[in-house]
Length: 111
Length: 118
Image (cartoon, each protein chain N blue to C red):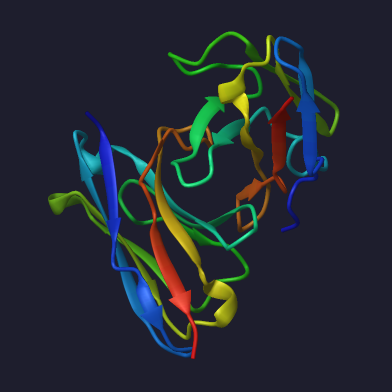
């Protein structure tokens, strides 16, 4: 199974908004509403911030929002803060015998 | 507080074996599907293996199929990953991750480092 495609890096200034894309196929992102997003500060534990395409776990700020169109999912971080600087990964269910796939990861830099 | 704690990582030669453990506390492991996810140095997250709550359904990534075995001991709240015929490219931090349904990982352990080197 091939990794979902994300931009390697995205940057934005404090207070601005950024969007990270996650492109797959009709066998994963496009075919199912099981896209998740994870925030990973290096050396720390990955944290679930979005599931089922648009849902936020309790405790995740509403500055984090997500959507999907066709085979591409997107994560938007509004009102960018210093602590948002981290790596972000999308993940999706994929049809077949290996049912999970992560994206290639995006490093977010807050300028 | 729900907590997952991995152990069993270390330095091993190519072709060798290791058994990773994941101890769960603050939850009843038998209620949940569980997964192993790894991160190779300088690389992204990679899903490795899945087990249903009973252990009857298991999936592996193509990169580890036939070499790794996931299992669980629900009576003792433990998850395992047996790593055999290890390769240099298996060097990674291995995380256990709880799945509450819906193909998402809502709780992660702190990870255990496996270093395959001669």
